[in-house]
Length: 236
Image (cartoon, rainbow, N blue to C red; front, side, top):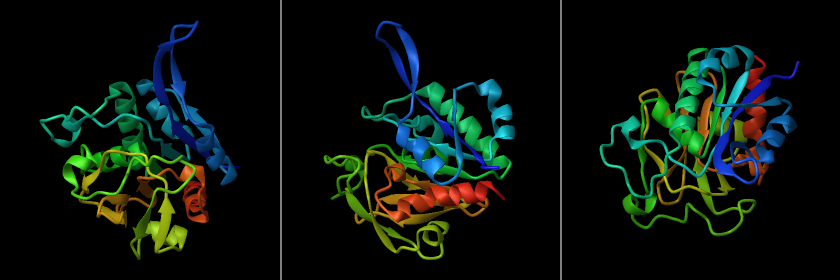
């Protein structure tokens, strides 16, 4: 049977006639999983259901969104004005990511999902790139997300390198935060031209990978290989 791949959801406040909060996800996340041979399953933020979710899931995608991880979760006492929180979403994603990793089930973190994954693994974040990285490239690209924004260099010997078979690729970019310090069991697998960390992975898990860009837009075969790798790992 095709593996079941969970996808975390974004949230939006009450709007429209229903005046009710909404869950959101872009269709291309689900399409990318299905195209790779997995069955996408969207996960409502129900903390009490995490153990049940994990028992049913073969793999997990922690998706991105226009919000940030609370700096207090990685030990920063100051919070920049540019930081936007969605505390309930973060709490759920933290819980299910941690639970999946404890079972050594495959996890792919995308953009904000990579940032959360890094903090779960014991790392820290740059709260606002332009404040902390001198001469940074545009990480919030002005052009559409289905076009590249900059290149990334992929480090040899990493899972990301084995999956993509590439030393450098063009990626889209839609973030103002980034990995600062990685956790003890993590390694860097991709770097932007300005030195900003664009990808991480865990040495302590068989498939635990994060990328700062949005491979669900499938700009290249390298992007598609991430979902193929996740699905393949979820079948073993």
